[in-house]
Length: 205
Image (cartoon, rainbow, N blue to C red):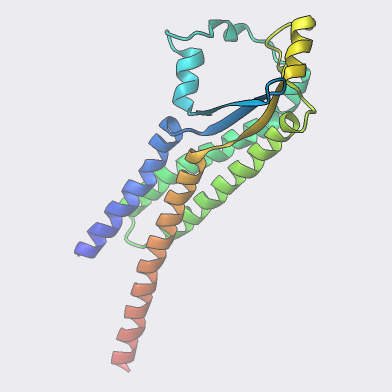
């Protein structure tokens, strides 16, 4: 009985941890290069940071609400939406794993859900990489982001600033780690139970 309580507690804690990880842990790593001085400026950004920066009452980017997306940026949106879908699926699977672990006596459903969670996070990495690719290979430069009108300043900014890193940061790895831990934890219990079942069969024979 105790081992069942321990199993459920660990699964629920790991499964529900994906939500605060996704919100408060850095989700994106952004690094820009100033080509003139050959210096790099980088930042790890969480969804909470994005909220504070653009949407909170203390936001310093209130003008972002009037931002008009350029055609170049708009062309990458399907991949960004796909990334968000995979992330949303991973969070829902985390909640599902916690609920199923509490409500279901069998462990195989949790095992399958955790495997699906790992696949969802893998999809998040792949789709975000496809989204970031045009920004990193120079297809879409800084001047095409749409934050300023075309002109001398836009041309200068394009010439001296280059985006060199745009990728999923630690939050993605931690969410994957949570699902992988549930997968291994549940798999270990399944192996033990299967071994006990085979032993009981042998005793009966």
